[in-house]
Amino acid sequence: MTTCAQRLLDLLEAYGVDTLFGIPGVHTIELYRGLEGRRLRHVTPRHEQGAGFMADGHARSTGKPAACFIITGPGMTNIATAMAQALADSIPMLVVSGVNRRDTLGRGQGRLHELPNQQQTLSGVSVFSHTLLDANSLDEVMARAFAVFQSARPGPVHIEIPLDVMPQEIDDTPIRVPRFYPPGASIEALEEAAAWLTQAERPLVLLGGGCADAADSARALVERLDAPAMTTINARGVLGEGHPLDLGNVSSLPAGRKLAAEADVVLALGTELGETDYDLVGDEGFRLDGRLIRVDIDPHQLTANRLPDLALLGDVGEVMAGLVERLPKAERDGATRADKVRGALAVRERPDVAPYADWLDALRRALPEATIVGDSTGPVYAGNFLIEMPAPRRWFNAATGYGTLGYALPAAVGAALAIPERPVIALVGDGGLLFTLSELATARDAELPLAVVIWNNQGYGEIRRYMDGSDVTRCGVELVAPKFAALAEGFDCGYQHVETPNALAEALQASQRISRPTLIEITAKD
Image (cartoon, rainbow, N blue to C red; front, side, top):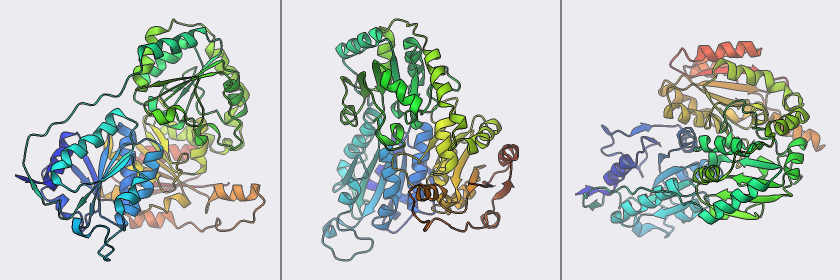
């Protein structure tokens, strides 16, 4: 015999989960029984929101889910923001929580950490939320969770286990881990899509985050079509650095919009065609006048935001490989089309990008293999337009989509734990950093050589600009930042203040020579 809690740990190991983020509490103690000596690594954040963001960063870096152990009630409402960010960006995350005894659920007795209906509260920020009423159904529920992670559009899954179910004894039967494969598009649909693309004179490819694990197929497809491609933030690096057909995230800019409107066939791959990727200026000026082919693993996304002329339901990587097999090598002079758009865009000279360009160059020059994790701050917004990466899963942030502040530091911790051999940079503003500053202690505990680059503009600079542009008197945005040097000393971390991009590059390189985080402060002039 074994207990439900022990079976959960066995299942996590069997499914290949290697990291748990959690703050032990009275409602999760049983989950920790027997945790020592296992392959599972436990990391203690300082706030449940930090646990969620760490799991998010871990998953974005690897494509594989991490798990969180969270207490009932306030622990779950704390992590809800991180779950919502992961849901918006299709990030796999397993959140296991406690909940009060089965005989007390929904009775409003004022018990510790009681929510009227925790499962219902969390269902809105998860792919599904399940209350485990019988320990014998745990294997089935876990299989359902990993079916979502591996064969559907991923996102957070929440499983809550009542206190009296955690120690419940069940048979210690052999664990069966199903092999899940995502759906594939029909041959008829592939052939029709290939025919449209073959006949196209001005094709355009839109690459979304669903392409992140199929970079080779994406590159082969774009080159076979000889067509310009726009890549969303979550697809950055899919085509590699400096690819002549890759225009990056330019769909909100005039020349990018003109290219999109003039395309006679548009192939949208693994992208929801959402506002924060294609209409950042908010005027709904992104038009697709040609025939639209959409490919997605989620049937709901096939019609979201833009109705397609042809929709293919299936794994994006498999569809791209199938199209490459069916398409002749085209010669459409796509690189010339892309160069013409680049010249018209002049992204680096834009007033909202230019102040950050040299600083972003310094990041890439100093640590070219680094993963850069961003918050909602000026240099991240500029980087979403400007920066190029050698591979996917190296540039991600919370500046779009759900758009939460405080993401960068804990997500960077998760990324650094996931791939310790790769440098990680957290790029954050002074305002956003204070949302989750406590997770600096987690990074220090783990002895991570994490570089935390702080763009210090004494408050909420982006909102200041919005207020000024909207003729609203500034209120609530002029804040006094703390003395980051003193904070670094208090957390036993390194600190450097830099005034030039070259000094930033030197500080970044130095940060990798110590086994603790380094705060690198830039006093912004915006």
